[in-house]
Amino acid sequence: MIPLKTVNDLIDKHALLEKELSSTEIDKNSFAEKSKEYAELNEIIKIAKFYISFEKDKKEIQTILEDKNSDPDMIKMAETELADLETQNEKSEKKLKLFLLPKDEADKKNAIIEIRAGTGGLEASLFAADLFKMYEKVSNRKKWSIELISISRSEAGGLKEVIASIKGNNIYSTLKYESGVHRVQRVPDTETQGRVHTSAATVAVLPEAEEVDLKINESDLRIDVFRAGGPGGQSVNTTDSAVRITHIPTGISVSQQDEKSQHKNKAKGMKILRSRLYELERSRIENERSKDRKSKIGSGDRSERIRTYNFPQGRVTDHRINLTLHKLDEFLEGEVFDEMIEALTLQAQEESLIGLNQ
Image (cartoon, rainbow, N blue to C red; front, side, top):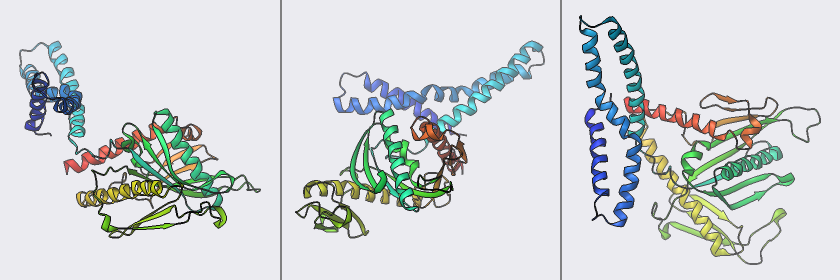
């Protein structure tokens, strides 16, 4: 049960914000900030008020049930009303608990997605390309913008590695459960015996960190410049435009050579490095918080096999929640992507609620 004081505090806060927003003395910046907070509270305030009134309403119904002089029809109606009231209260309590869960400050951020071909040779690189196309289609459907940061191609249209920045609304909260090993089972075009091959690609989704999120000391960086190389070792540039940035305290290193300008390569490299360091710090804090519980979802462990795409059976299975969708083609087109994400988000929230109740 949620303490009534906690719920009353929400109601009082909503009333105070309403009063402040109606004031003519409020400045522009405060108005924008308080309007946002008011809008968030507005979503839950009706439920909060119902939760507060539940005990009072329940007692009134119980009075009718306990009254020996009550009409039988009245008792039957009261029993039905009480059952409905208790069901509604359970739902309200759950929604309030979800609202009161600590917010992940990164959820509203843009994201950097990194996809790398894993085991499986050429077939793995083709699958990495398929995954990137899927995320592009999801982005188009949601009207997100996607910008390539770096790309390393293989033969036959595959990708050894691709890193991209995705911008829009609530990007990280939607894509954060994609981190991990994605496995594919299918018959490659080059397979003459019709045998199913298994290969894999890894996906890492990082919240895109701004300079205000994380301060990086220049003294902690080692920056090396070198000549960019193309396929087969050939030089693609006659100047030392490629950049490798190493964060000395952590050993995290980022190389960037897609741009002809050393300055642009450094800027792109710093964007990736900042996001990796930000995620490293977030993971450290989260591990401290959740030492006593192991979540099946959202661990972000890139070595964890999270999903299998089985082409012969036309299915995609998420192993963390044992959900199978027999809609593989639609999933890769981004059409039923949200169905998987909503199930993962719900499970993650359930796990958080269990942690809250312990």
